[in-house]
Length: 404
Image 1 (spheres, rainbow, N blue to C red):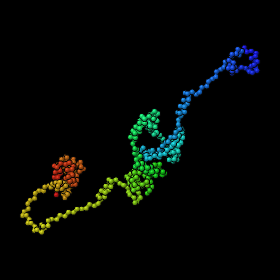
Image 2: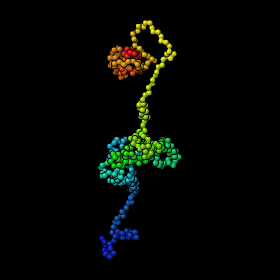
Image 3: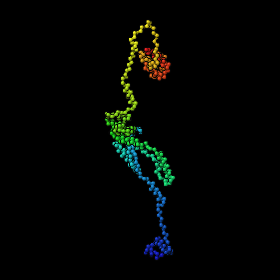
Image 4: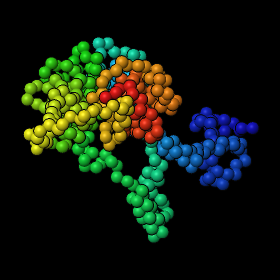
């Protein structure tokens, strides 16, 4: 029980606290018989974040997404181009767009509409009126491996040898891109210049937004595709006498343009077959010259007295058909033979007892009447596959039907 003295002291200096008792114990050894020990509560120990929490915080900071800039290559086709097949649409309008990876989708849509409005210039614009497709460039895993640094082998001799061998192997595999060749690069530059020059923005043209060659004579629009630009650019590389950026080459793909060129320039180039056909047609229209042969008898017999007439004329033998050979006359029917009424080929063959092979061969070659046989030669009969005996049958029939 607390004594009266202790109660008085408590009133004067206040009650004894746990700190007072602890200080008393440190100074006097802690032995007090008249003071009741009051337990001192232990101080709470505060812990730091700890190694695990620090590592987790560092990992969270390292895995935070980095803000990167993404470049979008945009190819825009007009509605008229999209109605055509994929290979016949012509060239697209190309542009690009750079956005950060954290941009919201609404911002991306707004930027796309700005690009569309700047190129196509529609009256009204709505995102739902257009079809969008996206593709990502393929990244080769070997490039990533080459870009990563190895921790252990990079400084060692073995690592250097492996890296050197890999570089040599990659250099052997790498082939020169055909686009990087000097000639192809020059043609590509010409194609780009031609596309830029002949971009069609004329109102009312169904090819508006693509490329057209505008004829300087009548102002007609001629649609240009990839093949036209490739041929045109290649011709420009051969010299200004072949083509320029304002004058297309003489090529059959540009015949519609070259036909309407102003006077003084070359006309449309035609193919070799067309030139030959025109030359043959011109030569056929010329009149054929006549070859006139005059037979002059032997002049030594002209002034001799006429021989005495035979006392008695011998009776004439019946006329036999004259059979011509290939060396005598090339025609089946002699040219001077008198004309005869035309007979159907079947009737003519039946009258002179032609074999089935003769009749079928003539019909297979398109003969339908007897008079058509006057125009065929003996050699042509041989070329048709007739045998010598069959040709002889035809010669006999010709000698009887067309007597001299």
